[in-house]
Length: 137
Image 1 (cartoon, rainbow, N blue to C red):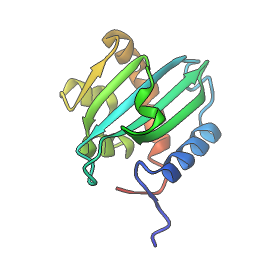
Image 2: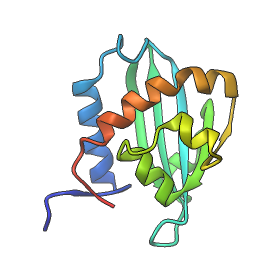
Image 3: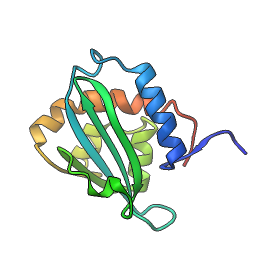
Image 4: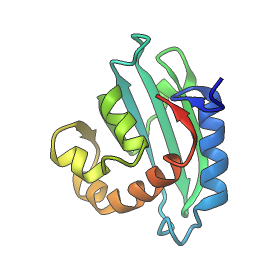
């Protein structure tokens, strides 16, 4: 066993939550209040997976991961971001920035594009913390 978390598992999300809460301050997150769900298509197991984050005043209030059968699939966030597994894996490893992925049509956004672009630097901070979680992709 590698000691890493399986990407998109509940254990991985628990580690992400802990790392984000320990590492990111409200100031670093620009006191943002927003929510997003990443809809991850073409996962290795054939299922569609969801990664949901909700921040209030720059602090992580809620984070969920799951499939179509889980609570996360019914969330109604400010932003819905759709892409394939490989793209989200690169974003989660901080190998690909959110803005770059959007501009290259690697992900699709449902929500206010102007606000999303304004928040992309905050999302990249989040992804740099996520990248620190030891993960098997």
